[in-house]
Length: 335
Image (tube, rainbow, N blue to C red; front, side, top):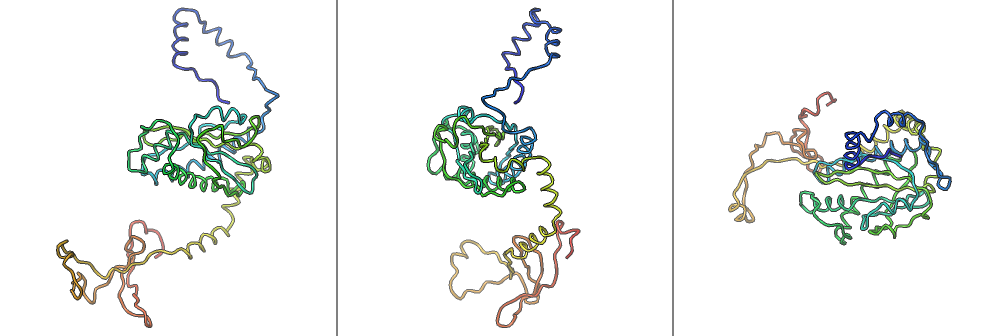
């Protein structure tokens, strides 16, 4: 657990005590040097070791990077997502810490048993919604239950987050998270008994000037079958072995071979006015800016990559590649 942080009023009070002589700096220093005793509650024993907490932190650091990239691209805004804490507490304490209404996704994670929770601060949710609908992403809406259209937008965000969560956990366990339900009242999201231990991963999320938190709640019962894998040693070795396997390269190469990309051959172009365009009729002839013996542009995706000449192959129209057009990004690659 993190150390207690003084509020501004407490700091001001402490400074006033120093100024009046009520507080003795030497006495406080002696108290600091004394051995600190941490209270242990036998009714609520810790279920996760420090190494397991550290591993969960690293796993969700990876998730935060993936989700950050997606949100930045999707919203076309400056987004920051980072893990700020990983703590274990009872499920009741977690539920009591949530505001009502909240944006709560209840997820199934087969083949693991049980459910986990993905909770998004309503301020962040409304900032995303405002951005999607063409706004600046400002949070000017008071917390309330989402409408059906707003819920559909957030479900899409959650679906993408689940894909990134699956990818982040891939080296530890291969699960397939699915959205089972969305709730706005934390009291209705009862996935485990109130006294059961859970681990809470808190991610600070910032979209423009709007800040909020994204919480991932994972009960101990869900992670119990894979607790032996939640170690730094296992996680690092799994990453190294994944990089060393040559079959992964073959899989990627095969996927690239099967990838389809649009290929367009540009016969030429011309400029006409809107008036001329509207007056076009059957039989009109439009003159292109290319000649019969000119090489044509071959466009792959959205970039011009080749020059070619038109012709036929059997009974089909075809082109013959005559030249490779290299761009700055192609330097150092084999043509």
